[in-house]
Length: 124
Image: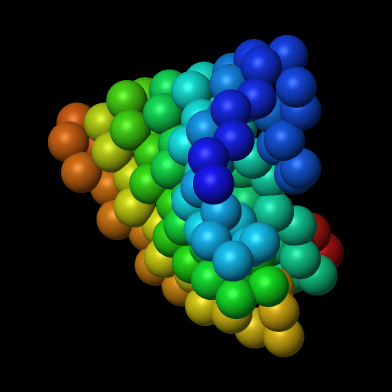
């Protein structure tokens, strides 16, 4: 089953400029969106990502397995000890399923990439 959403509809955990999704056996397996952004928060880290085109692949229980951002792809990882910013033409992010939650394990930037990492030091 394929579902198309209007650009004004809001996607869970992010905003999108139109969504096309594929369902298999009642579970979402693939979602594609233009001008999209998303946020993932955990106890130790916050991830913000965006791109002109995002493709999300889901596993069991609709847990994200992979996100591919194309054209003006951006990723910002904010933790207590460091901030990392990545921009590139394409960004491939692979996730592990940890207790039914997606946890970023690898991000690969391809094409005109720039990575900035800032270590945060505690005062005192």
